[in-house]
Image 1 (spheres, helix red, strand yellow):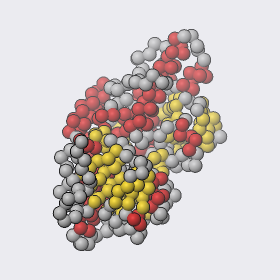
Image 2 (image 1 turned 90 degrees about the horizontal axis):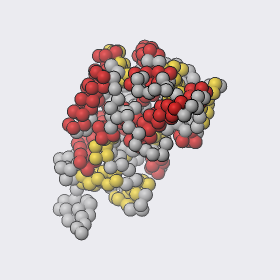
Image 3 (image 1 turned 120 degrees about the vertical axis):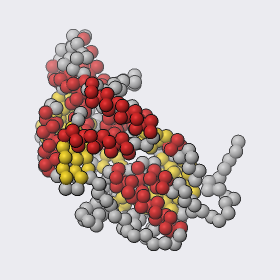
Image 4 (image 1 turned 90 degrees about the vertical axis):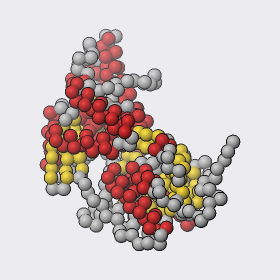
Length: 433
């Protein structure tokens, strides 16, 4: 067996060792931008793949397969010889010693550390809700939700087939509650409505999937709170036309296995899906630097925690206040990508003892899809809705996908789905339902 130390011990002039924790948009961008740099890179992620998270809901709602929105990290960096990929978890950061410790106990020393660990859903001090209201942040999450959605209709059909006509139980089975009216919640609610009211409407002999009840709950005054109110209201109208009950200004007070309290009303539901709030990785607590209420590391204009210029925190893990708006940047892919580009430049500038201007975010716009051929988009002062916004959303998301095969497959599947109004991946693969 051949063993190679990393970074190589027999190198001539010592090259900096860059450790990147997280293979999402931010971490991936840093590593790829340093492909010709005189550095050694260790990229560590708990998964073996890069995931295109904005399309995760399409896996959960049976439009795409996992392989269409994910790509193995080793395949991405096959030809980039200065990168070593490790599938592992980081348990602790020892910033004073410039070391990280893996959960296995192994340690790495770094010259520059990039933390791009992403985020998980926040259950607002109620972690016990997660078992009854799964969130959507990983492929495993998406596949569990897909199984749950499809199995619900099968279970309802089976009830009628054996003559168990319990109206209350049937209504509970065919009630879906989506908590959170941001882009993920809006997209999820719209997709479930299309599955129930269009895709499945002629496929069952007992139940009528069009009787499915979908409730979207948002605590703010309108949907898509990061968008202008007019676009949020447009999203509401479109969803209501699809058959979704939209409840804004509503608060979820309790989540149970068979229902949810919305304000003081108990809604019996077999399917509760969570798309509200984010919390950063607990790894950031080991930094010993200030964190915000969501657990994100507070960073300066160079994307570093104060006092640690050799550490960069980006994407969902970073609390960075935009100089233009005075507000923290949102946890979206364009932010992580631009921050990754900046950090790669910073690492190169440091190696050359050069100065680099402060990070500035260029807001290229925001968009969210609501259903087949429907979306909302904000680009500067321009607001767009309907098919044009959906077309923009489709093109941009295809371009951001990693790998030509994925882009081509997704484009063909979307065209087919748009013409036929079908969902290509309606497979229940688990025998434990």
